[in-house]
Length: 213
Image (cartoon, rainbow, N blue to C red; front, side, top):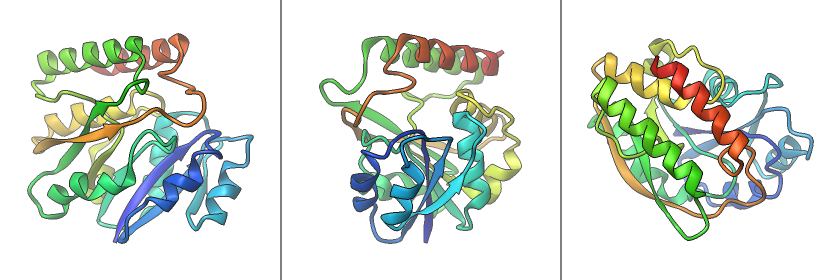
């Protein structure tokens, strides 16, 4: 069994389809990060384990899900319908087999899925990551797989938008084998709270810039 951690902030419309697509062998853990649209109740009604994390922040939600997980291997994925859970085995497979320590999903965007400002911001952060940490990745994709005990020991401190980047930076520093596989990136369900807005993207860039420093 692999635990799938799904941070959620007002994703009630997307949750049913996301959970319906989770493949056998994966236990969905939806972390309700202060939703006001009943996301937690919807997730519970569709069979997910629900964790409440009222402290706002992507990293806070991921950490709460990681602490609630029990499986040796865990996956992380956005809960907005932009990523296909059916592709999880391709991401988790190398970690489960012991061929990699951390695998990221390199997003292949479909039309309308990735605003230009968000794509350019992601590219800038990736280039900085290559220069400063020597990590040869193409994307800081939100679909990823890792061994839970090792991730708990890694010491990630960020509880906001710097969480995904800090995970990679610390993993590289620890000598982890970091891999990537291509995954489909579709338009999300509903309105984005982060990359869909210039303000949200700016906040994410600020958090990640602090992490790189």
